[in-house]
Image 1 (cartoon, rainbow, N blue to C red):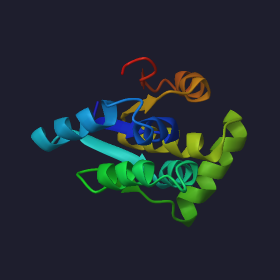
Image 2: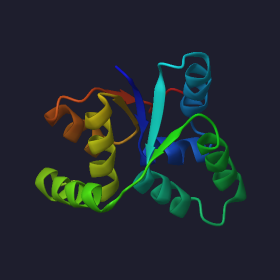
Image 3: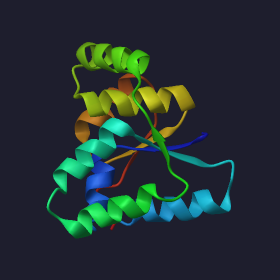
Image 4: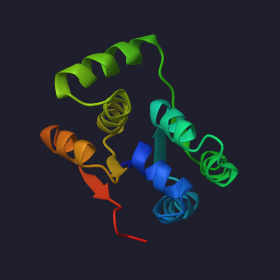
Amino acid sequence: MNGLVLDSTALIQYGENKTDEPGSMIGLALNDPAHHIWVPAMCLATAYAFHAGNPTGTGLLDLIVGGPIIVESLDRDNARRVGRSAVNLGVTHDVAHTLRVAGLHRAWVVTADDETVEAAQRLEIITFDIRGTF
């Protein structure tokens, strides 16, 4: 494993203070330069949209992506791949972007979503389900 990819649900739960896992992972990344944490831009946008009007939620998101997190952008070529993956896997765009980033970096996916877990299993990507960890 090269690191972790935080999906929309992990970011949303962190913004709701329902899990402290992403915060714990940042501490791990700070102490181990070989450990990386990626946040797909589609997931970050989804989480910000969910927390719109909630200064605590958006503040926590600002905090988490202000550290050693790598925000994985979505350029034209990746947008094409993510769009095709979403259709082929039957998932939302943020889930497709999560799985693309995880596959590219050989990383685990941190999630609280059945759709993501099921699609990741089909691609043989390991998931860390954070439901009930707080």
